[in-house]
Image (cartoon, rainbow, N blue to C red):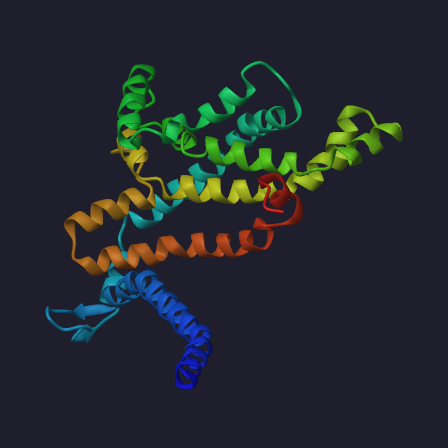
Length: 282
């Protein structure tokens, strides 16, 4: 029996090591799964010649970067992208923030139904929704129009700009608002001096995500804005369909730069105390 007991002891001693090794294998596999497409994208962006079955490009070059930066439509498309996305966020503030505050602080019939119904826009294929919207916009003269593009991009941000700020308002302690009222502050002062500052991290995060969603939106912009309004994602679609793979890779990297910078900024406030409390994380 003693050898059996020794084998059992050795087995139980090795179990944590085996679990740790298995965990590392899973982490490395996940990292490979996530990073491999990005690595391939970077290689394509600098590849001049890359033929199968080689795992790496045979020749490297910056000619496609030079081609993209000298494309006559790049500057115009960048201007459209950086003038539509901020306006979408501003309109979302005007429309969605009052709704978020109402969902958080007011009780009215159908509150839960309307709150969940906001997801309806994300429950159907987006392209079908864009076609239906384009039919209405054609009747209203908004096809190929700046405001038509802004409105179709606004569809994508309504849920984000309502749900996340609602969580932020929910995370603000009611006791602080009551204390401010007891000190003589009127409802407007309570909102501006207590509620809004504490809910501001959630509003900032929602605004960043809304900007990125509007900035990266291509299908709706293509349906409503083409051919007069061509944003960067729409231009990338066109170039990918008509030019070699490195062109699409270069454009993808360029489009990812503002996304990366804004997400780094959002990371610091994404799980701030009151935002996390509103989601029930803590």
